[in-house]
Image: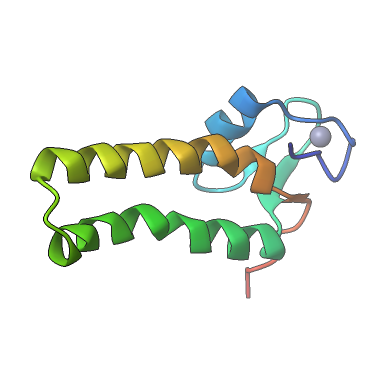
Amino acid sequence: MPTCSNCKQGWGWRLSIKKSFSIYGMSCPHCQVQYLSRNAKRKTSFLAFLPLLVPLLSLLTNLGFLAIIMIFLSVSLLFMSLYPFLMELSSEDQLRF
Ligand SMILES: [Zn+2]
């Protein structure tokens, strides 16, 4: 689970998921705005493509539409449940130029 790089308070799974939907940084409930670290952005962006690869299964296999949808939803839920474990927080936006 992520830990705030400023106040060292841990974020729970639910708070991490909730904050991950914010566009411009994630405000820590105890102090200041936090950002995903460069390493965490790299890891999560790689895993975010996995659910998008599921529709390719329909081209490679004879699975039905409903099976593809179920696999897509399962992979998406797996990604969402693992996402907080991949988060690392930083006090600076490391990808800003
Ligand atoms: Zn904090």
